[in-house]
Image 1 (cartoon, rainbow, N blue to C red):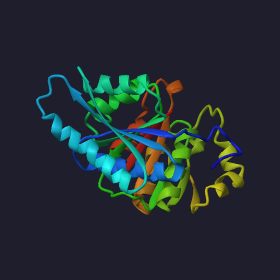
Image 2 (image 1 turned 180 degrees about the horizontal axis):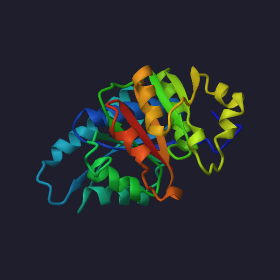
Image 3 (image 1 turned 90 degrees about the vertical axis):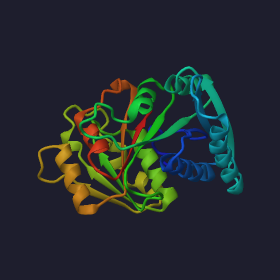
Image 4 (image 1 turned 90 degrees about the horizontal axis):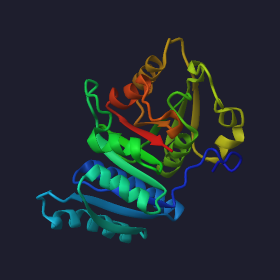
Length: 269
């Protein structure tokens, strides 16, 4: 996909998935299985144990062993791993920087708009400090796989790597994609997503149903996104940021991640 523009690319040969008990980890694990099967990728299912954590190691072993067994049945290579660190969030970043991984996919629960945290203690730290690309799912009410993915397109809330991730996910889920063109809100565009929007061949390579919706008569990104969610009811929204932005979350990104009860995925390359 996107051979004509390599800037729309995210390497996914070796995925690392932090495992916790609950449905959120299960959702990203299923997502990683789909990616691994389609791309012949390898998955490391990891759980981090803090040194002072009283939880029995056998419980953690069960989580990663289940991931291994499920992957084996599906013909996917899954490496179960348990690591012990003083601190879980720092340990996870140390693990990703000390070994060869391409992408970390992490799931968290939705945070309140009143909360200063976007993804919780671990998610916020990993997003800011990880040396590898990260995809963080803020899990809402929707189940996986998705049938309708929304991709708001503006340099202030998205990146080319996130576009690749969204279309890859749509291809795996056989879902529809709506590109909401919000480029008019970019005051100083760098690339303007021109390679994507002005070359129909790039989108046709994806071989999925893609609809482009132009921005309406609103005054900002929040209003545009909020209105579209009400009218189209997507299952998932994909946005992006990059290290060059110093991971400074705009109010628009915070709104998209926190306000809707649907799933949102932030990709940082």
